[in-house]
Image (tube, rainbow, N blue to C red; front, side):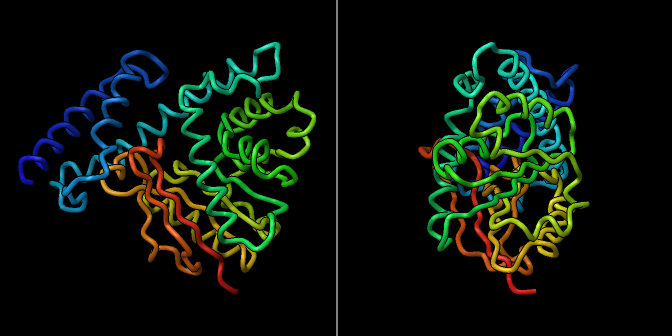
Length: 278
């Protein structure tokens, strides 16, 4: 156990130094290799390592690693969204050009199943906070699972929304059901009461303070009874995404938390919570 913990700490520190010294986090062989190595040491679910008991130095770099990875993912999604949007054919027919598209298919199916389990009706309007340049969740749910639902994607970055719009603009159905809002979600108030379900992307709030600020804002403005679908992380995966504890969701009733195994094909835990009455 002690040897396993010491090895993990050394691997994390070495990788952090390696990633911090990269000239750029834009897509490249060095960037891809570094973050693949990070994924490989953080993915195991069967481990006795307690993240909270790691040495202070490793604890202190956890948030920085998440921020670096978030930036790298942003560049990668921007690149692939640009490639897809420049195709002469409908980009939606070529989403599998993105290396992790299959992961999104599997994650979205799990989220749809959880949604179905905890709702008595098919949602008419869904919000996705932090949709980015590749709004795969909205596209997959709209295309394969929720064929009459309208999706409202919120992102603070106008370029991300512009690129994302290009992916659906040539599809008669999805272009009418996937809508984009360029704004800081903390500035959205009354509009949040319109949604049956609100998804919160895993990389919205890349430190706990920022994440909880968004969650508190959603609790204040979502409609009573609406569902919050929140992506989190468990165990060593907390070096990839911010981990959220159910007790942190004040004003919500946590209905279920799904922790994926290695065979699930995706990294995020999924938490489903219902907004309590005002």
